[in-house]
Image (cartoon, rainbow, N blue to C red; front, side, top):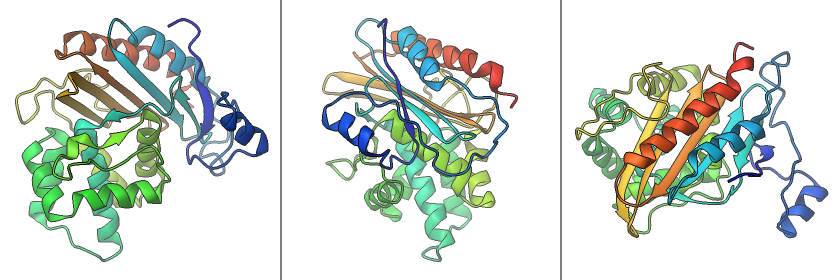
Length: 286
């Protein structure tokens, strides 16, 4: 859609002051930008995140495909949440990232200890997106509680556990909240925990454990940390998602719902991912 508006907010979702509060109360877009912390890279060249998101949405929104895009910048602490920042999608396998974060955090707090079997299951869940591995972790380690614990800790107001607690793919979230989660992994987690999750994500395989071709979006052979998601068919709609960390700086989430059948959605997600890479490219070396 021409003229798509992407606002820029903080990654934490904290209040941006009276003007921003008034804008929200009136259902008006806020362009207020806040830093969530001192910039990670103060000298890094600034990037127009809102323009990158708007261009990706323009490229990807086609036909009966509903697309949400959000981009965050670790260097500046900003996020562009897209033209419909509160629009939710079923996570499908993106829910596996929430469980991964919860597991390493609970282990760090001394609440549990991940054994070799657990680490193999986590690797399978993140590399070949194994549903069997996720089922085991979800059941053994309180998957519904994991969603609640992570979303509360990160102020993810738009993310909620599934109504049927056995169906982890039905977690609801937004691209903006996925960017928050990626930032938490990249910036907040201790290095061993960060490297465990991102290292597995960077080894994502084109062929998933169930034989699905997950070579779309940001899983393009570049070995960036990426997580894919797909789901069919709730409410006569399907879902196809790709989230990634680019160059350790940019946090990107592309999420869709569409009629059953993944062909057009693959093309749309590919186009959006290529657009984001293009528009972030000139400053990525910073």
